[in-house]
Image 1 (cartoon, rainbow, N blue to C red):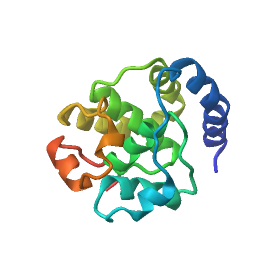
Image 2: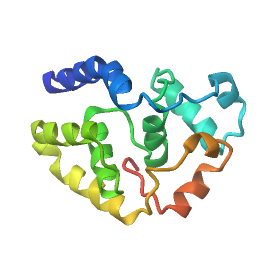
Image 3: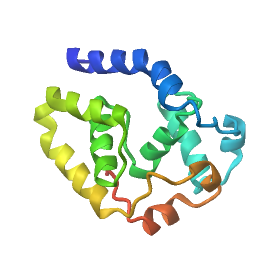
Length: 157
């Protein structure tokens, strides 16, 4: 792993709890468990969320579950460059946040990925706005149906 990736990962780990405390204080953590998600039909977005977490060695992050759902919807892996591209995708989709702005500004360290970021932004613009959805209520919906309904173009094909 390169030096700049280590910096980004460290910054995320350091800022996660602070972000949750200051920007997600009114958000309620999801009331679902990993065993429940695992029990769902394999074509449902809830199962795909479970699979994403397990495949990447992650746990559900209380109050931050929606971010991982963005990964599932856009088929974005957890590489730093793809995390950054996801923020550009969401910017194109209409999402705005202070944290997102900081991430996008800091992406100057990844100018070699500018084509990926521009493509992600344009694909986010092509998609119908989905960043505001209550994904906990959609866990039993087929992933392909949601992608089709919102014209979500995957980041990683």
